[in-house]
Image (tube, rainbow, N blue to C red; front, side):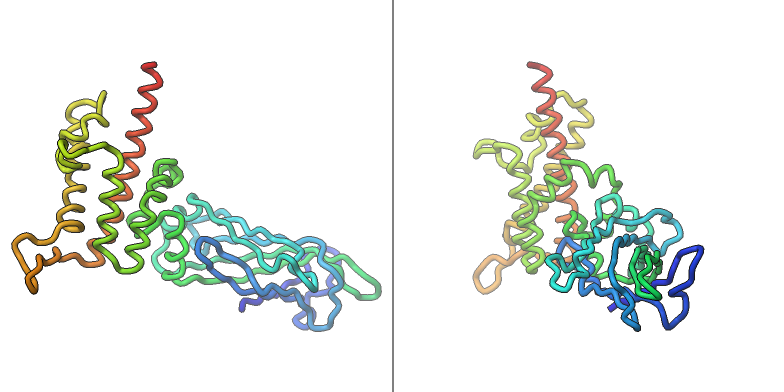
Length: 303
C-alpha cells in the first residue's frame, strides 16, 4: 500500500499544512496482463473534516532525469470515493512510445514519481474549498515490468530497443498477433512447438505446394519479391530461406543420425535459443507483412 500526504496548495490560506492535518491518498498498484491499475483507493484525514472531493488529477513521471515528460495517462474518476463505487480502480494507460522511451534508459527496476492534485471540501468554521497536492515514488520490479510490456509485443530487451516507429507499425502488430500461439507454447516451455508455429506462420505467406519444396529455397520467394533489385532480392530470399531452414531442421525434424531407445532423437534446443528464434521470427514476419503490403500497393497501381 502506498500513501501520499496531501498538503494545501493555496497561496492565501493554511488550513492543512501541519503534520496532523494532512489528507492522505492511499492505493495499491496492480499489474494484470496488459493493464496497470490503481486499486484500493482511499482519501482520508485524521480528524474527519473531509466532506467531498470535487476534482482529482494524477500524473506520473519517470525517476530518470533523461525523461522530462509525464509517462502514460492515469484515468482518474471520483466514483472510487463513493460509499458503493461502481468503478473501484483507475487505469494507468501506456502506449508503445511511452514503453520505448522508458526502455531506452531502464537498467533494472523502474520507479515513477506520482503527483496528485485535488480540490476538496473540508469543514472548518464552515465548509471551505481547498486545493491540495502531494507526490510519492512507486516502484515496479524488472520482472513485473517485463511481464507487463510483453503484452505489447515486447519479448526481450532486444525487441524493446526497437524504434517506436516500428513498434507502432501495422506490420509489427499484425506479426505479433500471428505469432501469439508460438508465444503461448514458449510460456509453457514447449520450445519445439513454438518454433514449429513460427515456421507455420512463415509458410502461410506463400503457396509452396509439393512441387516447390517449401520455404527453404531462395527461388520459392521470387514471386513475393518481384520489382525488387536483384541484389536486395537475393538478400531477402536468403534471409527468409535461412530462418525457415533453421526452424525446420531444429524445431520440426528429429536428428536423422542419432537414435534414443530406437527412435530418432530431437535436435538439442534450449529455452534461450528458442527465445532468440521467436524474436527473429517476429522480425521476419513483420518484414513479410510489409512485403505483402508493398505487393498489394504495386498491384493497385498497375490496375
